[in-house]
Length: 311
Image 1 (cartoon, helix red, strand yellow):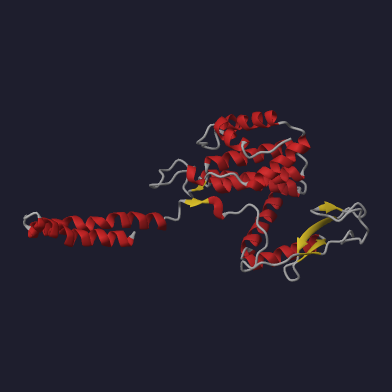
Image 2 (image 1 turned 45 degrees about the horizontal axis):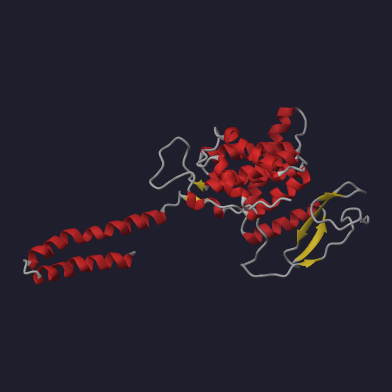
């Protein structure tokens, strides 16, 4: 862009008078004209620079919903060191855990984590899982964010416990935080972050065994993705800055990881493709007062149907 601007200015100051002389016109008159017109070549450069410096029109793609531990973008080989033994009571297990599960003997939860020092995948208890999570948070630079989230969770649980008259469950606290986040993100027109919270809700519903609602949330994630969400960080109801749009075609995409989750849940629920389509189409009316969709559900489904594979 800078090169083109300089080229236009040089052409204005040199080329125009030379052309005038060739046509037997007064070159000095055209030179004065070039002095007036030439500086306008800076206008595209200024507009381009302002657009690049505008931090408010931010795509949500910088907020990853699923990430694997990385250290300085180097590649590490992970050693699978899981064994079929409970880390709390040392009881033998019928199979090696692949995710969070409860020990049938002591009823304590077991977790699967990758140790950042040995790069070994292990079955660990709650305290060790928290230690490993903290180690990765320090490596990835998210330590402060983790501490803030823990403090927020603690305060919410304390407030809810007082409100309920008994200790609030962790699940209830998570749902309050989810709903608070949705209100904040929609209020600031951060639809990418809003979409990420919907995804987190679907994961929580899946863990709770609510397959139907988990599927609905994942389909909603796809609907938002296809519309092309952006993070504006501008209060809803206020005038947008030039070039700001809540949803744009350039931001539209379909996440393969979401599609994989949908296909797995559909097989568990025994839904067919017609049932899935009906649920998707109902999203438009169910959420139209909350999300400014820019695409009709039927048109969005046409795109989604091309990438879903069901028996």
